[in-house]
Length: 52
Image (cartoon, rainbow, N blue to C red; front, side, top):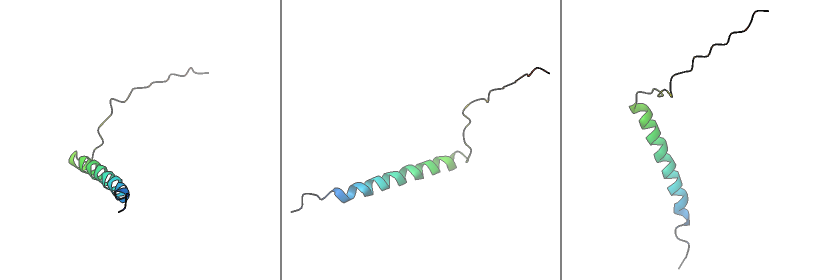
C-alpha cells in the first residue's frame, strides 16, 4: 500500500481554483458591460507659476 495517494491532486486543485477565479473575473467584467468602475472623482489640480 502506498502512503502518498493525494500528492498529485494538489496541483490539479490549484489549477482548477485558478481557472475558476479567472472565469469568475471575466464573467463579472462582461456582466457589468465591460466598463471598469470609477474609483472616484478625479482631483482637480491647478498649478500657478509666477511669470519671470
